[in-house]
Length: 228
Ligand code: C5P
Image 1 (cartoon, rainbow, N blue to C red):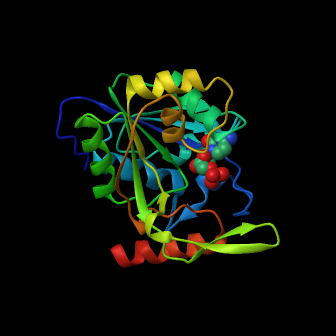
Image 2 (image 1 turned 180 degrees about the vertical axis):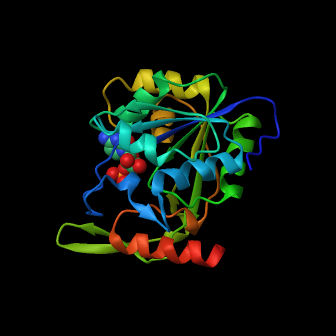
Image 3 (image 1 turned 30 degrees about the vertical axis):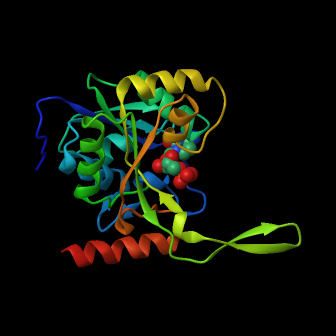
């Protein structure tokens, strides 16, 4: 099922070291079950389908056995590393463990159903020369900015919600993370931007929703059912 149109490896970091307190449950979010399989196994399979050839999965300390079981059916080689206190720190630890490959994707395990076209679009944009690539979708809700006791409507036509996988030229990601030096950013594209790299936008998908609350898991179950 793996499709990689170039001989060059495309490697990915899947961050899965968050606790997922908003989702609840007895096990970490990334090993919660969606349609019979752990979220992290859906995420790795989605990346592999889009052309990723090897993956580093960043997990909570002491959970290696749990993730080894969760990844037993992975279509591509994987290795585990222990994450840090923040997402950014977890990505940095993933970078330190990356196998060879000039195109690097960083993906949230919490986005298990990212469509193959989104993964391919991100990879293609990096191959075409972009340093940092993000998949985005428009904002459908009316958005208000709270200001003191009041609030004002924001023009949503220029707003985009940012998803993963984000794609990077390896040098850019490595250089930018090293330069961040303790400053905290919300995603890796912002880390790169702060280092002077341009961020390129490509189409994302509503199906790449991030599993955050129990309701999201129900939506994801419905998407899987629909795909089948
Ligand atoms: O908490 P949030 O859903 O924004 O986390 C996004 C992703 O980052 C999740 O896949 C989570 O497992 C990961 N993460 C991590 N290490 C942390 C915090 C979050 O790998 N310290």
